[in-house]
Every structure is written in structure tokens, then in C-alpha cells.
Figure 1 (spheres, helix red, strand yellow):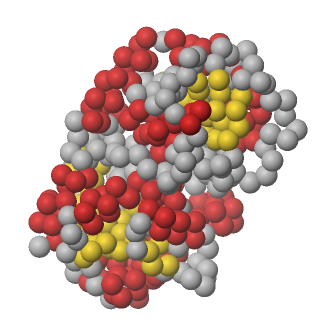
Figure 2 (cartoon, rainbow, N blue to C red):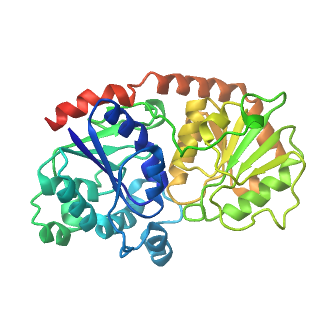
Figure 3 (spheres, one colour):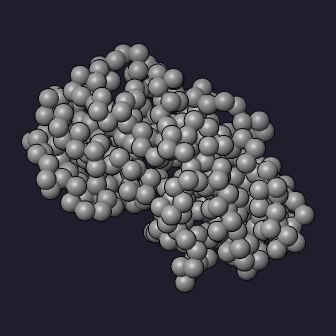
Length: 372
């Protein structure tokens, strides 16, 4: 079986699909990945990658975000709030994804969450499409409405509808509404390979807190959040490890950094780091949220970027952490998250729930049957 993975050009959208791609390759199937821009770095995961926009003729997600701020609300409470941006991203990449599919001739297309170009590429070949979940978001009726939302794209490629579809849902069932017909699958965290420094491996004598703030693309309050962390860290009895790899600029240059704060600018894999952490402070991104759940680590979420509010709400409502605005972040709040027995119990429950879901390896025969 030949499988084509298609992703919106953001590493955070493609990385969650890497474990399934590995599983398919290990089972003897041919795997190709079609993407562009920052997501091309997934080639470092040992995957074969096709750049579907080598001349950079399509606007990046960052450029779409910056140029059309009207496409998404500042604080999304449902996927429909961001539908205009999702439709625009589909429109921008659909031609390239369809062209890549016709070049590769796959038996199955697996695509990133809420990227409509994937189903269109599958439809152009008459093969099934599989949406690979990567967050706590629900897709609602986004795909069903594509023919009416972008009729010009369907007409341009002589598409008369959508392909046979399936969805892989990695969200813990107790944290989200049921997605009818979706196939549950365990989330295996992957955010790129990297060296974990020896001093950060294992659990330290005292408490350690990881801090990750995403990128400037999706975390517009990044600088204020980082400044606030530096301000309150000195009053917390813990070591703070602040991950700044990929963050442009010298974010800590003008800040007074307490001695219990360690700033890491090299790429560090988040999931193994969390094995030695008592908690995490983050911006609400899907990768950080799911990695913390998989590691069984309490979360303090300061949401930044429209979709992250949906995920931070799920964290709060399930009791696996707390949420706050930047100005509400203080030492007492951080200490409270670390010391809350109820949060630790809820985290343990969700971690066990995730571990019980079918692994990507177990999903391979089901995908082969779908493509047959």
C-alpha cells in the first residue's frame, strides 16, 4: 500500500502524524509526505518528503494570519469561529496537494486536522482520505460543507464530491465530545528529535517546571507571558526550564532572570523532559497539552492564539490543570497547581485512559483494509 501524508505547512500540524507514518513503514508500506515551509523539517524523522510549493508561491499560514486578521476571532470557543481561516488555508494549498497526489498515486491519503486539501486530493484519485487528529478540537461539519464553501475549487478540478473518509481521534475521550464514527488512537508525542541534556534527564532532587510558549505565529502574547514567568519564578520553590528553541529574538535580554530559571535555546524534546517535571506552564498548544497529559504532568495554561482557548477550557473542565490570563499568573497559582491532589488524580486518570487507546501500530491493518 502506498500512503501519502498531506499537511498544512506547520511542523506542529505534521509532527503528530509521524508515529503513524513510522508504523506504516515498519509494516512494509510505502510512505510519502507532502508539505512545504517549516514542516519540511519532518524529513529529519527519517521520512521521504515532497515539497509541494518549492517556489513559495503560496502564502504561509503565518502570512495568512498576519494579512487577514479578520479570518479568525481572537478567542475561539468552537471550530466554526475559525472556519474562514480554515477555508482560506484549504483554498491556498488544495491545488498543490491535488498535484502531489496525482504525481504519487497513493492508495490512501492521510491528512492533517482541519486541512480540506487532503480530502480533495483523495477525491481527485478516487481513494479514501483519513483525517489524523492532533488536538482536542472537534471538526464538526467543516469537511461536509467544503463543496459549498469552495465550489470554485471543486469545479476547477472536476470534483463532484468528497471521498470515502475516516478520522483518527487522539483526544482523551473524557476531555472532549464524542466524534461520531471516528477511530480512537493513542497519541504518541513527537516534536522532533533532539538531545536531552544529561542534567535534564530523570527527576531532580527538587521540583522542576517546564515552560514552553510556542512560536510567534500562534502565540501572540508570547513576550508578556515570558516576562511574567521571569517575574514570578523567583518566588516559587522549583527550577524552571524555559524552552526557547525556534523563538526569534533575545526574549530574556531585558528581563531580570532569577537564578532558579534555566533558559534552553537548543532544541530539546519536550516529552522526555516532562518525565522529570512536576508541572508545565504553556500557551495551550495541542502538542504541549497532549504531551503533558501523556506524561501525567499537571498543567498551568495561559492560552495564546484563538484555538488554544478551546484546549485550555478542556484542561480546566477535566481538572487536569488550571488556566489563567497573563496578569493572573503568580507564585501562589503555580504552587497551587503543583500541590493540588485533585489535579494529580485527574491527570493520572487521563494518562491511563490515553495509554489504553489503540496504538498507531494497531491501526495499520485497519487502514490497509480501508484502502483495499
